[in-house]
Image (cartoon, rainbow, N blue to C red; front, side, top):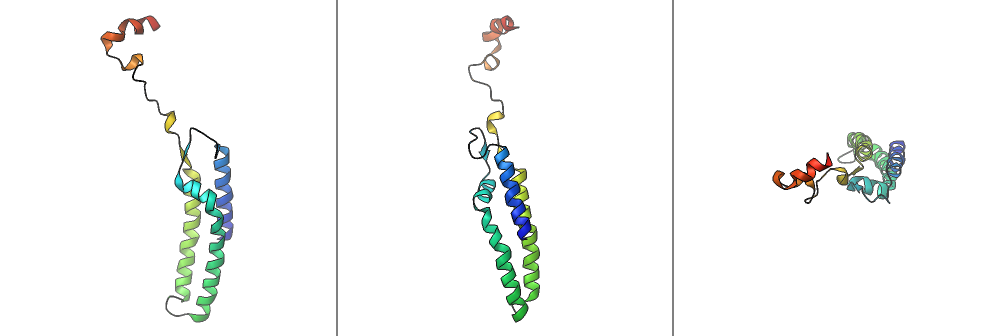
Length: 123
């Protein structure tokens, strides 16, 4: 779990830095990517806390402190941590400014009768 958290944090940092984080003006960063980059180092505490919980559960072994609950929680965390980082790595940003939106005053958006001579003159 610790290794997955470190690899995810470093991988996300690499992907974000390669795309110009934080200085890129035209990029809209997704909130999960930004939050994981800024606060993802706290995921390093999750394996430690789970290990403490697993040791206590092994010794007490009843109710919510049973080994089955500790094992299930460990499996969930083992899937959840890399899934969060992989999602953030694969979808770190959107670039809405790269979508073509024609200007209202451009030749292409005016009625045909108005811009026919200009359009023919361009060709």
